[in-house]
Amino acid sequence: MIFRRLRAEGFRNLAPLEIEPHPEINWIHGDNGQGKTNLLESLLYPVTGRSHRRARDEEVLGFDAEFFFLAAILEDDTGESLELTAAWSREEGKRLKRDGQELMKLAELMALVGTVVFGPRDVELVGGLPELRRRFLDYTLSKIDPNYLRDLLSYKRVLRQRNSLLRAGGSPRELEAWTTQLVDFGAKIHLERVRHLKELARHAGSYYKEMSDEDGPFHLTYRSSISGNDEASAQASFRSSLEDLAFSESLKRNTLAGPHRDDMRIDINGRNARKYASQGQKRSVAIALKLAQAELLDQLRRDRPVVVLDDVFSELDPGRRERLCALVGRQYQTFLATPRPDSALAGLFPASRVFTVQAGHVEQSV
Image 1 (cartoon, rainbow, N blue to C red):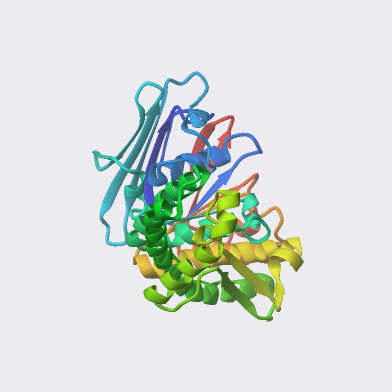
Image 2 (cartoon, rainbow, N blue to C red; image 1 turned 90 degrees about the vertical axis):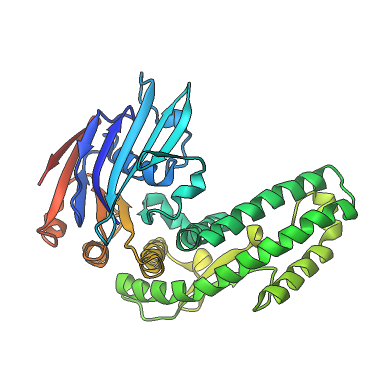
């Protein structure tokens, strides 16, 4: 999938704009605070239905604007076009459309366009909380399989109900109906995460070696309270964990086992990367995971994802910068935001487009 055109009005500090991205490489230059990330956000919003920076809709509304409107025209690998629009105002709220038809649920966008975004804070994927690694897995698998997204949303709904009942002091008999559903959806999520983690680890290990020049082993391990190689055994294991924790759950009034508490452990050279890797190693691991995510989406969706790199070069040495650009730029439509042009990197891609952002005004040049 590639972006052919983007139109934005009333969004953040951006002046009204209409741009035509290059199908391969798009450089976005501008000093800090001028609107580079806002431009990337306006690009991603129509295909995700929300801010990739997790901002509320009222926070992305331009100063003195009454509404914002975003329209993206995309084209898949077969040449078929797709128009996605997003609008928001305080009076009408959010409205998302696909080819002019209103979408009633945010989840309807998930299967349409694959995007892989890497920003300065994504190094926390390695060193941060388990929630970040679960979110990474859930996003990847939801893009690959609509059934996974359906099961994940159902699991979260049941989890909220079960936790609410625990807080209210519900009896074991009252909890049982929600426990049965939780075990059912949780086992499916567990098995899909474990299954795809093997392929993700293979790709990430290969990319890590290219990015880091290290030849040591690279491993991803799924850490869970659930075991089992099929749905029945995973359900039995999950239920057993919940039964063992029943007394603790009654005290803490919270569900203490399940996919919402699992983690993905990352080991390089036989050591836990979260605890022992240097900042440079963590950054290389995070980039490798994102590149593996892109490859997995490409293979299993049969449609190339769009890659967005937001100010990631500042902490990479020149060699790693060139390797990263080479890895993504020749495979996917890529948007790279940097404070200023880099002639060495630009020379790698003669066919590209440059967008300069200054005080929210975007100037396009070939």
